[in-house]
Length: 286
Image (spheres, rainbow, N blue to C red):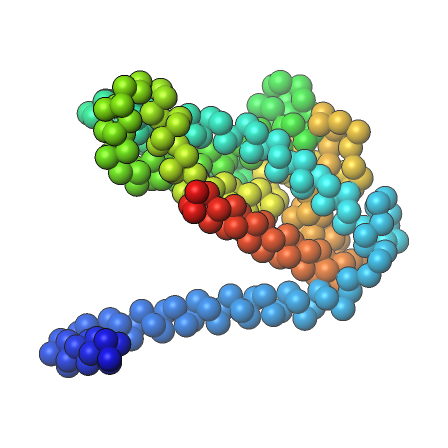
């Protein structure tokens, strides 16, 4: 009964305001078009990639015969962990400063936010050139996983800062006031009350950051290099899955393996998002 009543009221509103009906239809069409495009891309990747997922592409050592993706998968995991270890603490602490400690009207605060927004809009190829000039050449790290990780950390830093900042702002001030009323200090309130409440929002930013790390190619080609095997240290060159797929496709000789790699990247991304959602839901319930 309630649903029918709400539907009737909504219908009367649309009749009285035809422009609202037009906007509602446009919104529904836009959502449907987005869904269709997404499903089309996923279906195209699966149709072209699944038939070529063979045991040979899962060999531990990459050769010109098998075009194995396992070394690239291992390098992707290492690159993701290194980049997050660098960027997540910096991003969270920067957001805590912006929300909890910086005073309103602070010019330094405006500079930090302007810098963050600027970094978020810079093309990845520019980050790659910066990493090449600074980490690879100036610091003498060469093409290495460490150079790629620092470059990616700079790339994902704006995402983590902005999402963490919004997550901290969404925490009700009553939590802070209750903590202060019980005699807790500023630092204890932030790390024991505010930060745990903002974890779901922070994880959302980390998920976006992981997605960008997994899908990045341009920045890593100039910093981490394209070596096909698993490096024996973080100061050695190694390609990630996205770079591996790009290299196979650009050579034109391994298109089937490139599509198979795209399927693995898709599965990896969905798995990361699902796992992160479960973790965020658990923290929300607690």
